[in-house]
Length: 357
Image 1 (cartoon, rainbow, N blue to C red):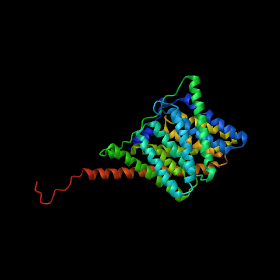
Image 2: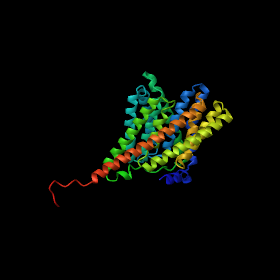
Image 3: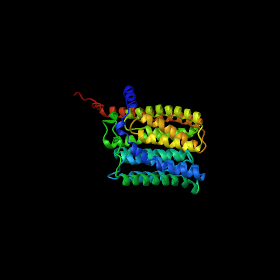
Image 4: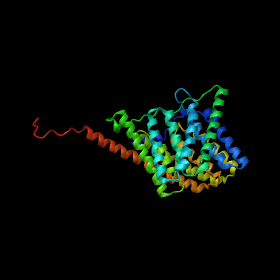
């Protein structure tokens, strides 16, 4: 299994690359960042750009027959999840339960197509991310509102590009199935419920651990667990290894660039756009390379608002490794439990006392 996973991690499927579509996603990031730099509201510009970044991946998705609906629903869902996560982050128990609920919904969407699954994952990510910065009152609505604004801006720019060029990118990615070989003896409904329980429990434990350890940027633990978990154990392990390996490479790359350039805010914004473009280009080509570029993107995006690069890189790397390990361990434990339950079901019942055959 490990050899197969390693071979898949090192494979680049360049047929999935869509450079024109990736370029159309960049203005949605550039405008909020430029506005933030020009007005001195870098944090607001960064949050709006982060919302636009997430929604941009929806341009490669389809929901039903619509290509714009995934972006619209994702923007609204991310906003709502950000509001709830900002309030839920005030209580460790509350946010663990919320993560379990959002994660169970995400697992349920695995049988509803890649578009629905992608939307559910974005909502889960923004719930986790926003919980790291809890607030009360009307202030709790601020972050989600900027996320929504950035997402709608991104959707507007992309749909305008489609209309002006008359071209729409191909739908990327493969359909997701809730199948798990170890659960073949279960009915489809039972498999779906088992997957929802597994993913919900994994995310609840990951969030509880992040709160309990109080690690800097600890939200990357449940976020990584959410991103790498997949219906099949093999795919979870493969994605986890790719994520962890890519993060290590991206951390090294970001460290070298930060040390060599010591960039000013304007240069940081250009680096953010450069690595965002690479993320859009590589997300379906090679996941490890995508993870490396995503790490650098996050480091330089946070550096724009004053987060020192070296600690950000170290915290992100450690927490990613923990989250990836938890996702793999949680999946393996539930597969083992499912196998034991299936084996007990197949075991013949004992003959009645006195029965001679």
